[in-house]
Length: 267
Image (cartoon, rainbow, N blue to C red; front, top):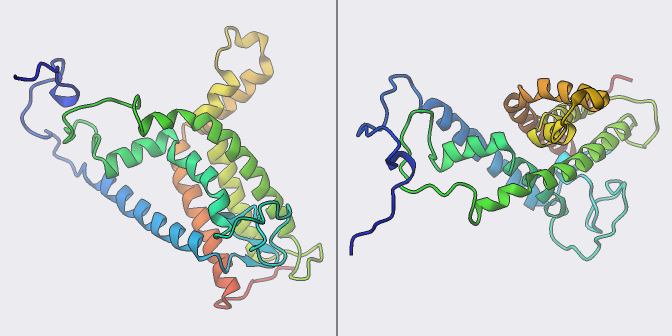
């Protein structure tokens, strides 16, 4: 018996019946290809570093991939919040990376980016996707994207922890205050970008200004909503910048820990 299911997506009855994959003449494939290459490189690097469980602390600097370090496998000086998960015997990074990773994976911008680059859904505007059926984010596993707001709360906590790590970086290797090295600058740039990316999130904008009937009755929230809305316009740029800053901060600390380079001390 022939199927009576109505086609969806580009084959739907309301879409233009064009046989060509696209009528675009520009290099539309360049953007998804770049995203695919960069994301793949970051995933490979972050996976290697997360599972290595080593060279993530060079006093007084702690890698953002391992912060907070909460297990008894953490090297001396890295556990600023204690070791409450002493039973965890895998890499300490694997215990906490689920939160920043979950925040980024469910991020509205990152969804667009990896849907296009990895699933070709669609690969670009005005380019037909190869999938014949579209269900949106209504079924497993994509329905889990709807917990993005809860990951945003966790991301705010992580941003506070990274800020605390930044404060601790203004010490020397013996933990004496009043010192500053190049590592402090690297961590400062990373923390600023992390905060800007987190605060520019669509969920943050909705939490501040959503469901308000009258902005005039909530001047503080309106002011915050206005500021976050300006950041939100640059959310994609901040998503990329903060991704690079996390990797570079970790790489800098890795090179310090392995003795490949030495920290430049300003005072």
